[in-house]
Structures are given as C-alpha cells and as structure tokens.
Length: 117
Image (cartoon, rainbow, N blue to C red; front, side, top):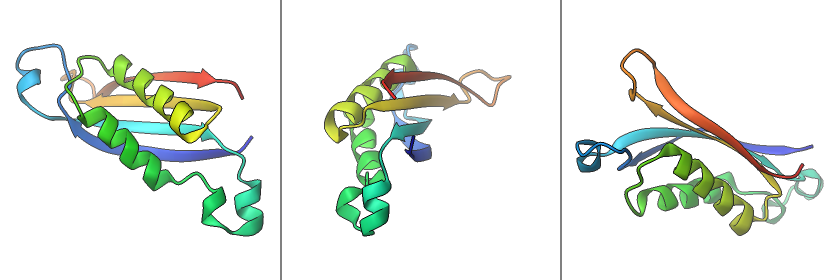
C-alpha cells in the first residue's frame, strides 16, 4: 500500500476545555498517513495524479481554525472525515498532539484510523 504523509503540521488555534484556554491560541501538531495509489503519478510524473499534501494541509488548517474546539479527539475525527470525503482517501491515520498540555510531558495526543486499506 502506498501512503502520502504529512508530519508535524503546525496549527495555531483555540483549543481546550478550560476558560483560560478559550481566550488564547495554542499549537497543535498533526501527523497524517493517507492511503493513496502513487503508481499513476509516478509513471506519468504528473501533478494532477498526485495527492497534493499542500492542498490537504491548507484545508486541514482552515478546518481546525474556523471555530473554537474543546477536544483534540474532535479534531482528529473532523480531519479524518474531511480527508476521506473531500480528497477521496480510502484510509487515513490521524495523530493530533498538544504540546505543553501536561507540564511533565512534552506533548499529549490521540491517534485514530478510519477507512479501509
């Protein structure tokens, strides 16, 4: 199976359940693994057959920043559904990390997988 990867996509957004969190922007880091058949793009060396990681990254950033969200679990699910429905990806693995959320950890996060390989 081929995959297109995005690593540590940095998104500044309003995220959190506490009142003080709802007043500031915090950084989230996202990793995506997306099932995508790269054979046609590789054989033709043509952009139109590739899954554009820049377009996906821009769409995810817009999705996450359009309104405040409380849970990173919600963000992971939103991102997975968006990638699958808007980019015709059959399987996606999404990791959302929230650096600094727990003082004794470098980051906390969730990983979900959706779709079929």
